[in-house]
Amino acid sequence: MLKVTIENDSEDGILWVKFTNMENSSNMFYVSVVYLPPEFSARSVNAHNFFDVLMEQIYSIPKGNSFYLCGDFNSRLGNYTDFIQGIDQLSERNITDFTTNSNGEIFSEFLSTVNCCVLNGRYPIHDDFTYVSTKGLSVVDYCVVPYESLCHYKNFKVISVLCNKSAQPGSFRANHIPDHSVLCWEFETNFDNINEICSIDLSHSAHNSLNQQNNTYVLYDVKNIPSDWMTNNDILDKINMCIDNIQCSKGRQFEVDKLYNNFVEILHSEMNDKLETKVKVLNSTNNRKRRIKKPWWNDKLTNKWNIVCTAERDYVTCKHGSLKQQLRKDFVDKRKDFDKLTQKYKRQYWYRCQEELVNFSDNDTNQFWRRIGQIGIGNERQMRIPNEVTLDDGTISNNLETVLNKWKSSFHSLLNPNVNATDYNKVENCILKENIICIDLDKEITIDEVHKVVMNAKNCKSAGIDLIQAEFCKNISIISILHKLFNLCFSSGNVPKYVE
Image 1 (tube, rainbow, N blue to C red):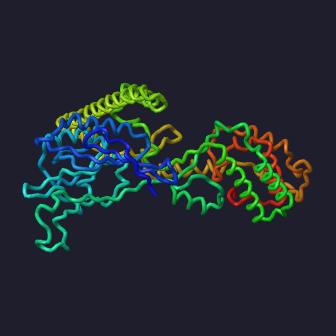
Image 2: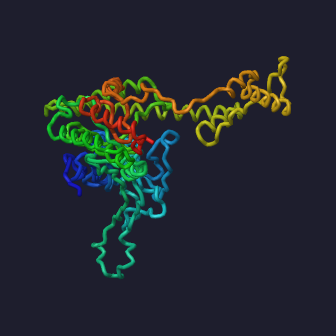
Image 3: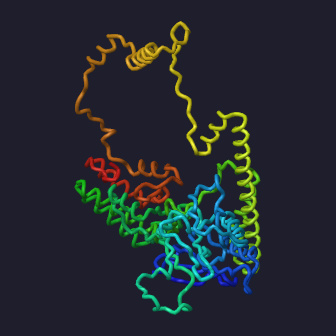
């Protein structure tokens, strides 16, 4: 179930709608319905200002949330690109409408600036004109999505009402037939359905299927463990009962597995009650990485990006209404400056590459083809390992038989070192004792030993399959359970299946 609310309708022609998951309020996405009046109509507006406002609203979307824009942009892109060729790795559009207008040029600049692209033309089987009337045909209705989310949109279709085969001729009046087509597509939300973990099956197959179905990872705030951790009466009763069950167990495999599952359930119930959690969706837009290690990236962009991050943090953490509006404007302005500078360096890098290729094609054809390989058109040839060896007398030989014999003799001496026969006899004559009894090693594991190991365990380390980190175990009640459980495993020789 989704809760639908109007997020922003302050600008004419732009409506933002927020869709929130009723079961988990942290799962949401945004949709913007856009209408830009035609450029020469009585209702025309300044297209530059219109797209600047839309850009500002896109920057105001909380980081990590999906969004897309759809509507009538009255912009004919034609052969304008919606990304920077050679920099952004996107597939080319299949062009249906080759005519352009001034709005189309502004729209193209807007798309490359906000790192978004259109779905139109990327599904050529079901692509068509979106505006059909007696005045002509055109593509002016679009669905706009971020570059990194393009893989989550599938089966884009343009359905023309005039192509309705079920309609009989003359069944509709001409003024009742819409001149805009219907745009359809499928959108994957990547919503997470796990609110909290109450129990867990520790078998490898169950764990793998859990990750495949939800593709999520739960993170607990281990840096803010409360002072009343594992101290309330209900938890202490569960701990005492778990210890009693361990003491009464005979150490059979299914009993050890059940006891460990019970221990994990106790910890998870306390973790879910007293710790803040964050569900991390793997391989999605929630895990955006900084655009580093790009050939066009430089120190100026790094400084600009740090300024943008600081401005965003100030805006998000501010609680005062009037100041928050000013900080929001400041953040949007800085983000806009950063994007403009990024596009500038992207284009400069691309132009430099083009000029170098032209120069190499005229002066150095070998270097030209090497550079072609570097940009992905061909694979640059790697140098082979030289077929030569240095002999004992210092000379170098590239004779194949000599090289192979040298490698053979080198590995033979490495794997078969010269050992005296007396050393082999010492090993063969060694008497192996059986049933060795060592009282110290056969003693029970003491609680002091467990306490020392647990308290010396490093903090802030990744959790295992049971999501339990070292910080959660640094408690005398948990150490008591671990002490009993370790001794049960030590005496029976059985350990929980997940650690086998």
